[in-house]
Length: 102
Image (cartoon, rainbow, N blue to C red):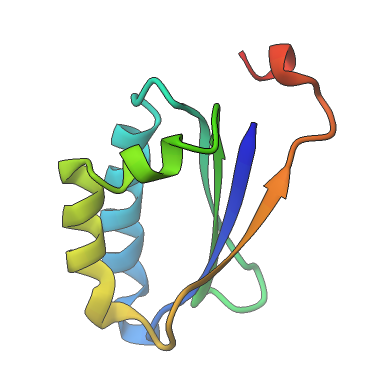
């Protein structure tokens, strides 16, 4: 498993539009065969901050995800909504084992 946490801060006035675009992307991303999870979480004490928790089956699957029409639409839609550039951290799975992600 290849896990990516994407950290996003959006402009206050763009929170609802960002959520709408991001949920559409997440729903479609979850249908990709290489995606085991695609969670969208919003920080409670600062609703302008989000984390996208993306769990891919192989290290090559994020590149495939970035070639989809829904990702490109999301990327272009939310670009102007960002308060700062998004960042990410990549992780390796420890628990549950890979069978536990099915």
